[in-house]
Amino acid sequence: MDNFEEKNRGYWNERSRGYSSLRQKELSGPDSRAWERFLMERLPKGRPLRVLDAGTGPAFLAIILAKAGCRVTALDFSASMLKEGAANAEKAGVSVSFMQGDVMNLPFPESSFDAIVTRNVTWNLPDVPRAYASWQRALKKGGVLLNMDSNYGPMDFTAAAKLTKNAHHGVAESLIETCQELKDSIRISTHSRPAWDVERLRLLGFSSVTWEEDIRPLVHLSKEWDYDPLPLFCIRAVK
Image 1 (spheres, one colour):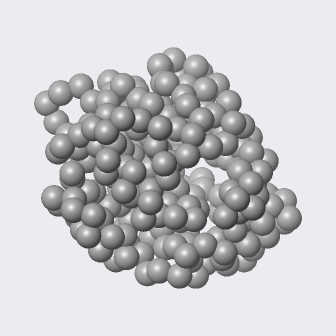
Image 2 (image 1 turned 45 degrees about the vertical axis):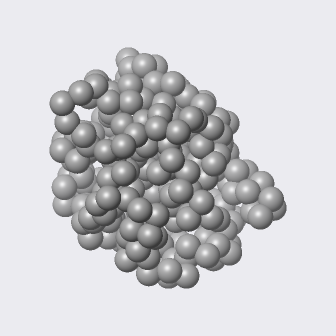
């Protein structure tokens, strides 16, 4: 697993600048407001929220939530991604607390957050059950987990990257091959999602677990990029 984590970190460090550029385009377009509306409709109401963006990357969700008035902590294992995220937050004029760490073993006390959000992260984790348990621990009672992801296991990233509107188009072939190898080497890629995730979260004891099969029509309004070629599900779990 150590070799996987080292290789995975290296991949995302190398991808950081190009990946950040994609998220900047989203932030400056109609998708940004769509995401804000989507998230705030599903997060707890009636109080200022302390939110963790787990696997923040270049801080897309963190920036949107900070603009909406949330107190946001953004966690990622990639130093290069955190650097991009901090620059993006500064450009957006919002305050976000950035921290380097392991999303599968959160460095926070129990009951620290009103909400945890994560987008396109769990597909890339070598131990998703451990991550879910850690996130449950860090949530306050009544806190909400929003996990937005896709069933990437069967997907061929190499073929998808050849599509001109795909987010991977133009990424070096060697990096795409590395991404494919990483994906194919972890257990989450063998499961049918989101059904598997829903079952795991219920077994952990979340009081409510609901899901939406495909939220792309709600959050992807821009026609410039096909960011998610697969259905983008959203799981909402309440502690």
